[in-house]
Image 1 (cartoon, rainbow, N blue to C red):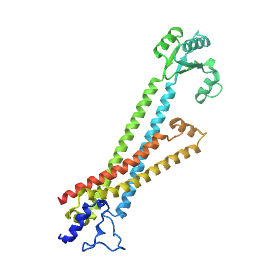
Image 2: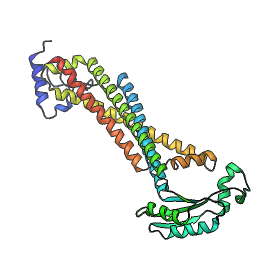
Image 3: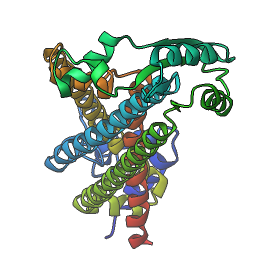
Image 4: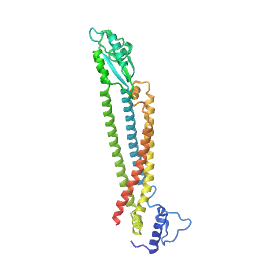
Amino acid sequence: MVLPADLKDGFRDARDAEDADDLRIDDLDEDGSEPDEDFEPAGAIVPASSIAGRALFFVLAIMSFLACITVGAVAVIASASADWRSDISAEITVQVRPLEGLDVTAAVTEALDIIRSMPGVTGAGALSDQELRDLLEPWLGAGVDLDELPVPRLIVVEVDRSAPPDIGELRRRLSQSVPSASLDDHELWQGRLAVMANTLTISGSAILVLVLVATVLSVIFATRGAMASNRDIVEVLHLVGAKESFIAREFERHFLRLGFRGGLAGGLAALASFAAIRWSSSQFSATPAGDQFDALFGGLSIGWTAFAGIGLTVLLVAALTAMSSRLAVFRFLKVFD
């Protein structure tokens, strides 16, 4: 392609100017002279709005929505798991089995004396007969006669989390003084909860990585498509000596704005989804289903960790969009070298 010398000089001067970042293809007339005062540029190197751009916006919004949902779900699960383990670690349970010839009431009293004498124990109390009947009612019905059934007596022990008691020593003392007593420190349950929480966290992280990879690939394809549709403009800029960094910066700015808008839309949609789920669960409060939901997720409270994660995800989507477009531009421009 042969260009007039004055047009080349005009492009070189614009390229070397301090405001080269604002360069537009239509800023010069065909003869290289300054445009008229009422002249308006026909458009930027990358069109601000196009069918492909609108499609990419929705793709980025969907990807951002999925990523924010994943981050929020992982944060909720991690918070619920921490609450479960905290509640379990705050208490231990002692069972006193009613063996033949054993005075269960005396055995419970002796076990309570041993437990309360241990350092690190903040409180201990045995469940009353009515509380035991309430626990057995879903399986055995109302009005259970505890004297006719070998129902163990339960002692709930509250421990100091910062300075818990020596579980091994407490178990040894109980076995010596009350042979029918057994201690459960819920270590098995804590281990299972930790494994479950870690598994869900790793799975959520893997899903997040896959979503971000799909986002990067979508941006790369969109960038290459945009450059292919504007190939003539990019070729002219390259031939007249425009720096690759200038061309890449134009595409990077375009896709950064697009990525931020798409990411913000997806993040807001994720927050709206969590709010809708929370509202739906509140409609079932004071019902068996609502009680089970609150027991599992603690009312689905979205804390500052989840909000911060969603905000960082939006920024990450925008940054990955800009970086991916920049790399795709440099790779595309190698064709002209």
